[in-house]
Length: 153
Image 1 (cartoon, rainbow, N blue to C red):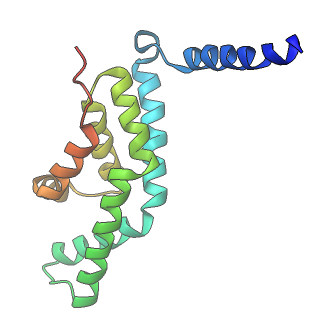
Image 2 (spheres, rainbow, N blue to C red; image 1 turned 90 degrees about the vertical axis):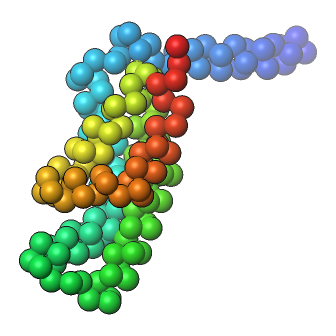
């Protein structure tokens, strides 16, 4: 009977020890290499989950670059793609990983650098990236992602 009473105590002890062991120490892990690998993994996850959205945005961008006005169907696809991309960039696992990374290292710039990396990897021109960055939607998404990051003192 004593054995059965000690099982819950042992389980709780193991849970506490495993929680402590899995919390990264920022001083040891926040190296450029460590951040780079995890950031790339998060960006790859975002790219995979939002492939069709990014494709629609690229197509609309190409039309505008050629001086053409996108058609109604292309504009509807663009609106839907932007909504889907917004969901992925605010609630997706890749962004959650970036947020955790930025909080662990107490560096909100990790997120903006990763978003810029995402745009670079997608082949967007500097002009297009600058245009995107001026939209309130982009600013709002970055603000939502970085909420609570870098506020520790």
